Image 1: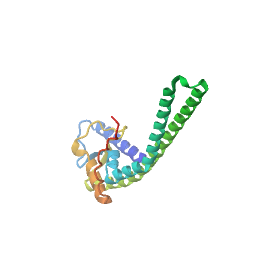
Image 2: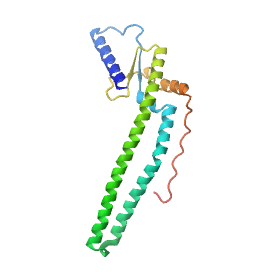
Image 3: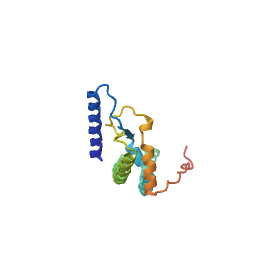
Image 4: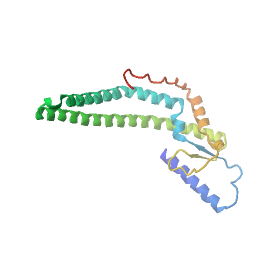
Length: 197
């Protein structure tokens, strides 16, 4: 993926250098350039949206456990504050030590969960990106594009592009048609938990 992005950048740089060398000459007849927001295209395929929803469901128990741990810490802090001066210095120190350890554990567990989620997301994305890349290449060839530039990349040389040159939606539609994965159902808004404001 990085190699193809580098190749695109090199090609784009070569084209711009060539254009400068030719100064006022128009592009060669038949030159057809397209732009794509490649990461957005991958993420917004039916398969990409389905995989993200599945991943979020898979990690929901971890997220819920972290929320419970956080609530437990908040409860311990409230109990410590409510106890006020009824605790001895040793009791206060013991409770603070427990709270501090639980906070460290929570922070580590949250970092581990985030790392696991990001790794799984990256694996899913990379596998899907290869398949979408193949469809994009086929689409570009079928529509006689000579160059496709990723306008969504931070290193993108694209400063402006006509909306008619953007093939992102077309590639998403082509991939969805080829993959046969149905669009995920629209997600319902999350119900408000009782007592939350």
